[in-house]
Length: 470
Image (cartoon, rainbow, N blue to C red; front, side, top):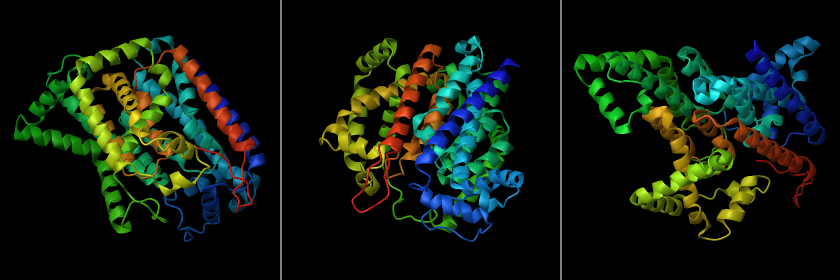
């Protein structure tokens, strides 16, 4: 009962807070802004049941607009007006307030599922509530609670898919995966992630049946896990076929969706719908470093404890050749594969414009000077997820690689799902640090809202106000 009461209070708090801020922002910016100039008219076409109309500048599938129909139809019926009249700018933006509140619940349930048996959780569910509140206020995502963008719906259905997968409800996870893909095509990668987790579950179950693992397999050395998996899987032809059959049964619906997505890409001649001129795939390997940097910036309170720093220094001393190899590889990837997208260089409404101009463009060597920070971040994130085991880390690394490297544009919003999966699987942070992190997130959100509302600026050839945003 206390758990439900706390969860309900948290949900109502997020809903009330987000709605209040939406009223404030909508009073100032009551016209479509940035990508809303494409999304809002398209949603209104769908609200009028005109499904044949499509703006060619839109690059994602129609999940956002289908959600507008689903969520606003009850409101239209309640008000006894047509759906198209209900699809106002405010009501469309309100949809992401609903998704944000839903994300709070999903983050709580995921944190409880993943960390429910950890020592820190003995303090009760209040820790899970606090952790979920911190994550739902993650500034890069929370800012878009008040704009009609795809980010919150994308996060909601991806997190729901992940939760269903962890609970063994793979059919429901597959349906959630379809919805996530309809919001953003690249979410197919996180469906692949769930497929990998399902495969890992089968392998762990088979090892348990053989009684070859004493205790938790995630506590074993990586080399021991690899040897054990190969020895078990390929011990005989019949055993191999048995394991493959079990994996196929467990992942059948995931594989059907992946196959369907491959057909879609083949027929569509690419993953992007609509405008493809500025969304071409690339080999932007430095995106992985940017992700490490941004994740570290939004998690630093958990990673800079003197014990963490000491362990890192010991690691450097004991593994000097590995550190040297990382430095050389990072230097090479940054030198050969750094992309400067035209949007990154020209659109001064986004914080990434200033991030790039004032750090990476300030001096030729600036981009290389951050290599030690990348290494420190990688070490700390690796250390904090060791308890998840080798199979989980392989799935995660492959999916982060696939989801980030093809993007030639540096865009912090691409990091939202990888960041959430990483943070949920880290060792549970202590309550005091979560409170500090919550205060930091609140201050960052307050600052970005202030900049958006109170610090508009104007381009010489455009009469409407321009505003700062992520």
